[in-house]
Image (cartoon, rainbow, N blue to C red):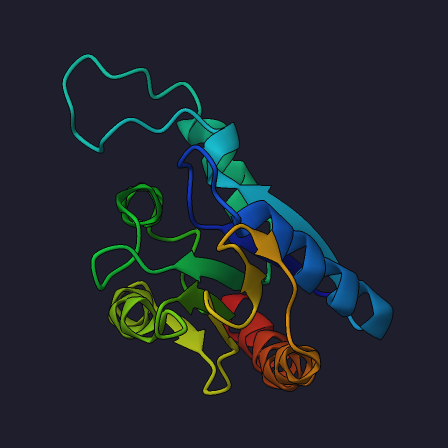
Length: 179
């Protein structure tokens, strides 16, 4: 069975990505088509890549967590029209571990995280990650109460399942490339 990591892309205090990630995992687990695991970059010590004297003791565990996955779903929040610095840094820590795998993106922000998603797509392409077209975009205004309590509109679950309908076949196909 394919292994799909649900990567939480924020480490900020008060973040809502754990709520979104848990919701995606709950929907995904009902499908029974892969093993889904939440991977929280906040659980790994990853100082700025190349920063002198930084405690990068979590880098090996980060590498192992990503390497064992066959594909990904990124939970992406938009900060200043892009992805978080923590996610960019975590992506940059690795290379081969990302290569020839598939990914979906679930984003949120004032315009559904669309601009962050577009930036992430370019980064994923460089890392040889095939990102799928369907992109659940959650609005801070309609899918969250008070900007903090995640209450997705019913249509969003359909969007997540449509995204996974694309992620699973791409993940399966790309596994043959990695052998």
